[in-house]
Length: 144
Image 1 (tube, one colour):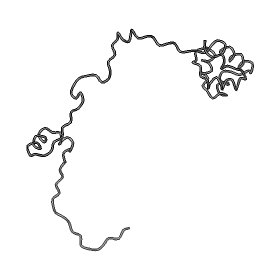
Image 2 (cartoon, one colour):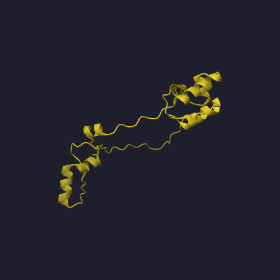
Image 3 (cartoon, one colour):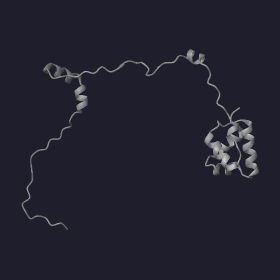
């Protein structure tokens, strides 16, 4: 137990008044406070906000007509049939499943499946990994 000092205990009977102080930022923007400061000669800073108070859209507006007239983007190059067949043939010769090949090249099984179905966009790094594991040249046969 703590030992108390055996001195005289006194009490402060002064009243304590708690008041909520106004937010300074909002008080500075208050029109009454701004007018008072202008009348008293205090410096008042005004800032013109760009498009403040307007109902304009932010960003460039592109018309539908321009979008329709724009040329369609070219289709992405897909894996050629030679690469598809060579990958599948080499994988089957090594008696590997798509999941096993994917695990050995550190890719998802979906990636191997897309390459064998011809839906994948050729990636040189993935093809290099497949070449290394399967022992077949694939990178000279990319694209249609």
